[in-house]
Amino acid sequence: MDGTRNGSQGQSVSWRVEGMDCASCVAKVEKAVTRLPGVKDVSVNLIAERLTVRLEPGASDATTIEQSLAGLGYTARPLPANDVVAPADGHAHAAEERDHAGHDQADHDHGEHGHGDTFGHSHADHENPADATKPWYATGKARLVWLLGALVLGAYALSLVLPARLTYPLFLAATLVALVPFGRRAFALARAGTPFSIETLMVTAAAGAAVIGAAEEAAVVVLLFALGELLENVAAGRARAGIKALANLMPRTARRLRADGSTEEVPSDQLSVGDLVLVRPGDRVPCDG
Image (tube, rainbow, N blue to C red; front, side, top):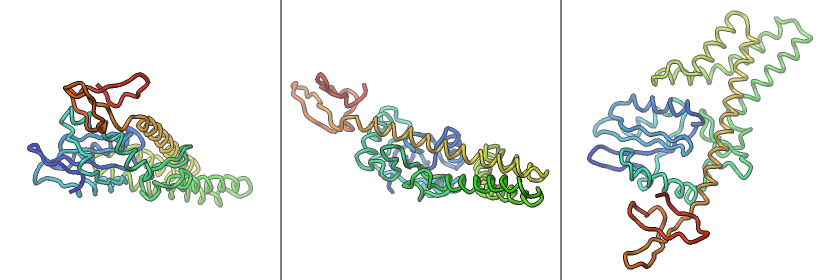
C-alpha cells in the first residue's frame, strides 16, 4: 500500500489531509483518529497538512481512517512510502521533516493546492476538495458567504420598505442555508468524539434564535461565522505559501566530507546523523545539526 511502512511495532501510515486551517481542525482530526481501534502515535502537522499514525496489526486499516476523516469533511490522500516515517523514531522524524520540505516543493510544487504568487488561491474548504485549485473567492466557503451576504443584505433592504412579516422569511432562509452544512459537520464531529465543537455551539445558537423569532440575529450570526471561516482559510493558505517559499530556499544537495578529506555531492535528504558537511562562505546550509 502507498504511504505505509511495516515494522515490529506496527504499520506506519501517512496522509496529506486537505481542509485543515486552524489548531481546532488539528484537534478534531487527532481526536477522531485516536478513537479508532488499534491507532497509536497520532501526529498531525497543520502547516504540512500531514497526518501520521501507527496501526497495530489486525486493527483499523487506512481506508477506515480515510472514511472517518471524510465524515468530518477532510480529504486524506495517502503519501508515497518513501515519504513516510514512523513518528516514534526521533531521528527518522527529523529526516521526515527535511525530506518533506524538498519533496513538497520539488515533486508537487504545491500545484495541487497552489496559492499563486499573490496568495490568490486557497486550500479546499471542508466540503469540496475540488476547490483546492480555485481562487479563494470561488471556493465553497466563499460561495456560502456570498449567498448569505446577499440574503441578509437583501432582507435588510426590503425591511426598510416592507413590513417585517414579509422580510422575516428571508432572514430565516439565510439561517437555514447555513445551518445545513454547519449542522452536518457538527453531527459528524459529535459522532467522532467532539460534541462541543464551535460548529455545535453556533448551530445551537442560530437555531435557538430562529425558534424564538429572532431570525435577523440568527442570520447575522451565521454570516459572521461563515466569513470568519473564510478568512481563516485564506490566512492558513498564506502561511503555507510562506513556508513553501522558505522550503524552496533550502539547497537540494550537500557536499558531504569523506573520511579521506574529499567531498561528494549528495541529495540533502540522504544526510544522516554523524555526517560532516562542507559549507563554504556564502553557501546556504543544506541541513540542520
